[in-house]
Image 1 (tube, rainbow, N blue to C red):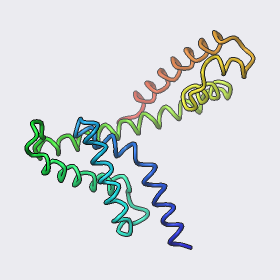
Image 2: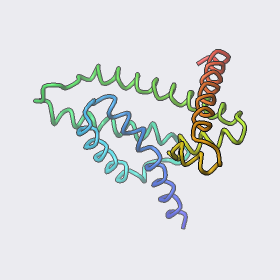
Image 3: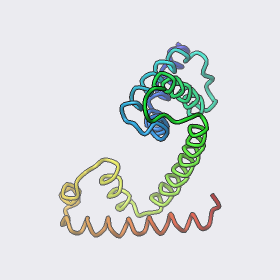
Image 4: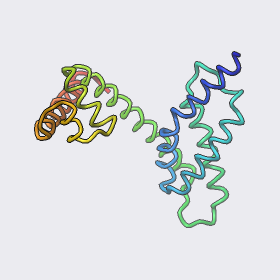
Length: 174
């Protein structure tokens, strides 16, 4: 039973971090085909090494280290290709990727905090439009208001969110 729970939890982690792994690999390879190939190889290795992962540690760091080695293996196989980054460039890109990811996470946290400060009606507008992908016309129909009203409300909400996030950046050191 516990092993099954751990496997489900592990699968959830793998699924949750696919986007970040893809972004990490793509940031260093700058080639969508290579990125998909390396991601697939990385997922195979992650699955084979799943027993080595310790729950409570950073899955992100663990999976990125596996991806790093898969990129190096891919690079070795493709040495004859014209555009190949050397190890120093990959290391610099790796550090920059970590920095960009950290900034992204901080901004996402700030945006979520700002969204939570909106009136519930506007939180629903934002959720429907930007998370669920609901059209402005459909939101308007659901709310019983003209589409122009929803468009204007979303415009004002975006401005409020921009101002809110900026004010948090000024008040909080990054």
